[in-house]
Image (tube, rainbow over all chains, first blue to last red; front, side, top):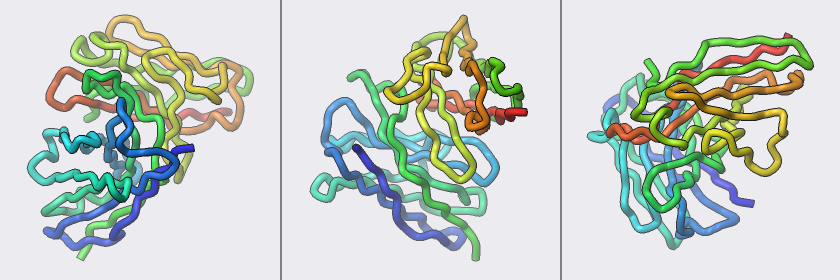
Length: 124
Length: 111
């Protein structure tokens, strides 16, 4: 059974960089047909897709966050990471990592496994 | 404002059926069969309920079904149970640069 687990700082100061890691267990991050995404949910609000990375290292970011986002993968540790720079209070959210399923055409069909989520608060 | 439009809330009594709509455009819902639905209980991660418009993952009750007509996708829950009370989100691939969009979510109340 695949499991994803987020970790990282729960409190970040404004203008600093948010850093999170998603550890994948029960399966390989290098498996074909899957992408690895970050999704966030501000308190009391809906879901927002941040971006994804393939095991090859290729990435795609939501244009609304693209200038501030970096997603990277560490295949040796079977994990991937998120960095979001210049954060503000609007970046306060629960951040989820998830496995995306595509059919070889780089179009994400759905997310079949999710981490439990981690709350990141931006405050001085 | 979310790219996909869902009703903010729906309600139903135990045993009844309800339908949640998810309206997009020809660039997302209407143009591709990559619509999925997620159930989220308070404080929990979303759970995949339907993918590719109408497919159910293993382990999801057959009381949950999905469909699509034009630019609107729908999630139907039959035989409502108390445990179905949750937030539901739709999602779709989009040909726009955003690539992946969610609906704003619908709160289901079981009366």
